[in-house]
Length: 119
Image 1 (cartoon, rainbow, N blue to C red):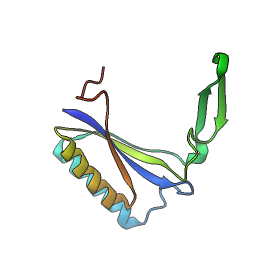
Image 2: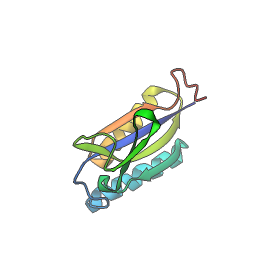
Image 3: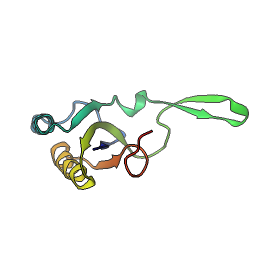
């Protein structure tokens, strides 16, 4: 079995816990479904992108720490699940359910090297 990240993307100005009750209910139902199916390894929401710090390696090995995310984009990962499933198709099906429940774009990506080797 391979582990997959199912990441939810939010706009920069998204406020955690600002979803309507119907969305929170749908996300809770999805979490319960994942648990019942035995695929959920971990789930976590992230604080606003304004709380992020970026650490960059500079020439000669110095480190630069700056406020904000590493990449400058209009969307950032707002939270994610780690799922353990048998096939990429199964991971994508959970990603579809996540996009519906969260009402947001979702990225599905396997962990580790191609072929499932994580070492």
